[in-house]
Image 1 (tube, rainbow over the protein chains, first blue to last red):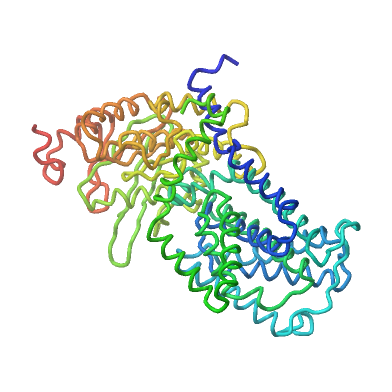
Image 2 (image 1 turned 120 degrees about the vertical axis):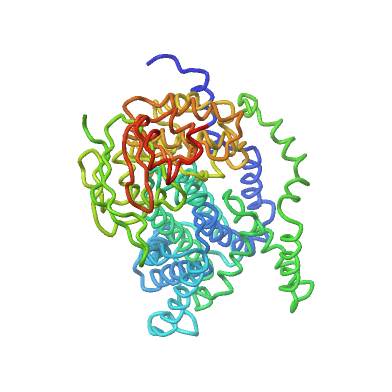
Amino acid sequence: MSDPTPTAKLAAAGVLARARWHPFEFVFWILAFSSIWLLPNKHLILTEVAWLALFALSLDLILGYAGILSLGHAAFFGVGSYAAALLAKHGLVTEPVFGLIGAGLIAAVVGFATSFLMLRGADLTRLMVSLGVALVLRELANQFGGLTGGADGLQGVTMEPILGRFRFDMFGHNGYVYCLIVLFVLFLMARRLMASPFGLSLLAIKGNPLRARAIGIGVDARLVAVYTIAAFYAGVAGGLLAQTTAFSSLDVFSFDRSADLLLVLIIGGVGYLYGGLIGAVIFKVMQDYLAQLTPQYWPFWIGLVLVVLVLVGRDRVTRWTGPVRALAARLDWRAKRQPS
Amino acid sequence: MTIALQTSHLVKRFGGLTATNDVSINIEAGARHALIGPNGAGKTTLINLLTGILQPTSGSILLNGVDVTTVSPQKRVRLGMVRTFQINQLFPDLTPLETVGLAISERHGDGADFWRVAGTKPGINSEIADILDRFRLADVMNTRTGILPYGKQRLLEIAVAIACRPKVLLLDEPAAGVPDEERHEILASIAALPKDVTVVLIEHDMDIVFAFSEKISVLVNGGLFVEGSAAEVARDPRVKAVYLGESLDA
């Protein structure tokens, strides 16, 4: 091999840009994990933040990367939730980590089966199909009351300790650490996935499916793959809810849940993986704070924030935080080696 | 001479409208072949049939002797038939570097690879760099495609197709909309295409057609009207009458 040309050296550096860790990301995860010690009496709500973040991350994989709009993502969340609860209740898989993987896999199977419906049509069609799938699954759960407990929810679930050692305590300490670690591990996997040629090809499909086909990308197969992966993530998120509350009810499939999820992701921003995580924090904190302030009217304030957010526009928010990001870029010693 | 691309009795009807009418074209390997015709002559339909976006009503398409009539668009790309678009069809969120890299990965069959960070495969960076250099895109390789100047996007449009390493390259009005001062860059890059690549040029601009092509096929009303060397077609009075008009006399 001859020596790389200057362009090849530049290309070798530039091509890794997406995979490189930004300093903000370290700060984010250090803050997230320090909450274990810094906010010990908030662990119950932080647990909800963690599974909601994972759920929103799942939606970001299909919406932010592949451009698939869904209003029924709760379908996979619900399947994961019931699967985790049922596996534990009937003693099929008693260890929570394995139960969680099982729940994710079962949701992934449902995701794979329904992904073919999502290949047809444009945004509106997909919106309706996803909504329909969630409604159908909810009614199935309602009808098979013998298995799922129907409208009363699935009672009598007892969770074994995690890895046989860490019991789900009533203050939610172990439950939170468990959820946070699951979120972190699955986030790292998603990050890796999206920095791969597969991830790039998804962005290509989102940007221009016509051209994606014209450079030889099997568009349908890629969409099926990412939809299945996202269903796994949503299933794990649902499984976390079921395991930390030892309960599952029809509400896991509800339309509200899918719609709220879209809100969470839009608040945080789509297509950079952290949007769902940041959105989940903002959404839950806002919900918690506003619910204390005005117990009946908190959705009003959430709605108002959303309208303001859309009117102001993310561009402007990005501009406001520009100086902070510029400072961070200057502190990023690796960025200095990168000719911009 | 071997035939790179062959259509025989290709017909496409949309309801009562015959957009492609019994077209049989043979394009030799390594040829520089132009496809011209007035608006509505069926050029775009023909391209869509060749690349597999549309299925013909009847007739067949052979690529290097292989019948590809019913083969999917992405499979045809892997068999070596690649096109560019008259209106840029690029990936706005990716950089030129990523776009070219992606096309190369797909050609190697690594596009579905989900557990390897893009760009870490040995050799791929020098291959990307080579194409970026050839199409004068090295200085903007890390800029998002969506905000590139039009001329650069036009170059990328062709560079992406070349990254697929085509055997037959269909260029759909490559210089469309490019300002005069940036035109030579596009034309130079087309002229510098490797000789073993068969190039089919779909073009309105007669200067480009005659500067570039050895053989010309004229389409009128969906059918093949005249075919011959550039000089023959230029002299043909029927072609002048239906299509070329004044532009040849200038």
